[in-house]
Image 1 (cartoon, rainbow, N blue to C red):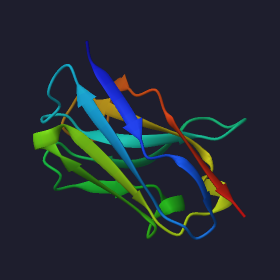
Image 2: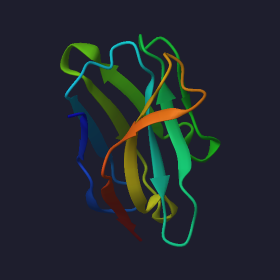
Image 3: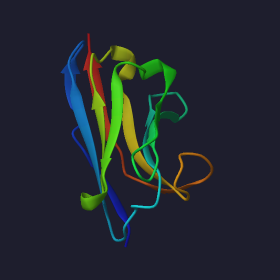
Length: 121
């Protein structure tokens, strides 16, 4: 059974940092792109960051560019999201996701259960 388990969320203050992790189990995703999405209350789920299968190509949303970065450790089937200089508008449930392909385009294959990030001003 495939599972994506996020961790690292929590309540922080404006300007703080958090590091999210997503550990995959049940199969290897070393040939799949992985990434992060988020959903704030009353809003649609949105793309945050993606990383290709080898970790050589990444992309982050304009809203978090310069503050968030994504990385992966294929040996441990884990993808990370480093979030710096957090703002109240970053408050959301953050979801880990896996794409069918090795690039972060096209259909998604698996989702995690989400982890709450709350940024208090």
